[in-house]
Length: 106
Length: 119
Image 1 (cartoon, rainbow over the protein chains, first blue to last red):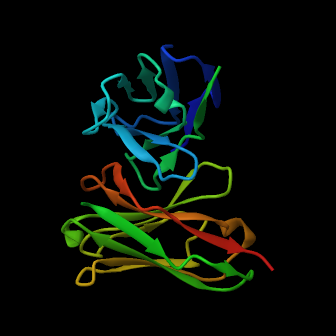
Image 2 (cartoon, chains in turn green, brown):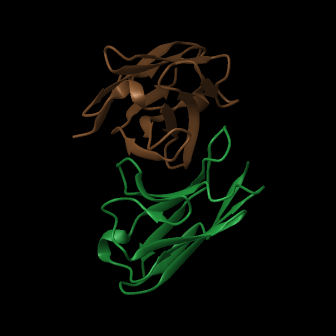
């Protein structure tokens, strides 16, 4: 299953609402996760099951979608949110990741 | 505290071999499925292997099938990745990663260990 993420790069300001999209090449139900990665660090799980917030993740992060189209939304971008975000399908092995979206400060 | 610590990364020549280790602590290791995920410099994430808690089920990405082998020692709480016939394109940071639940998302990652394949 191929996973296509867009955009690959996003420039935004603190306080902006940001949306990232992930599309799967075939239906995966809600077996989709979102991760945040900062430079030199391991990824961090934000959302799984398309919309379930991982414990400890701020509520400004939300996820939606099912089937083949999914979105990650950050309702009000904070300075610590500037990072790269990846989606991942876990419906079928091999697990596959989107190419990533780098969120930078405008 | 749940923790995964990788070791074994190194500079190795093309065609060479290397074994990575992942030491787990803070949770019942045998109850969790584990993965290896790698990230080439400046690139995205690539899943490469999965092993179930019981060691019965194992999967590999096509890019490493036949060259890499995953195993685990539940008594020692360690997972291994034996990498043979290494290629330049295997150069990456290798992460050990735990599934949140069976066939679920990854909820815990190690800090990564760098493997460089170069002459």
